Image (cartoon, rainbow, N blue to C red; front, side, top):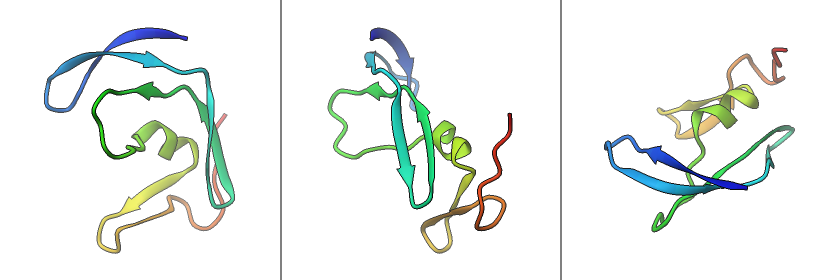
Length: 77
């Protein structure tokens, strides 16, 4: 769709392409949003906005995604 300057957590900046909205699914949950195309990144990174959109949090102890409010997503309008 376009390009925008993006600042990463390590304070580096890069021009990244922005896609049209994508459908992101995990188990019985989904959300729709644009994504950034980042150069030279070997792994896919799922950011906080898609996690919030699917009402998920990261369980760091067990290293997995879990529902922020139990087994059923809570969607806010």
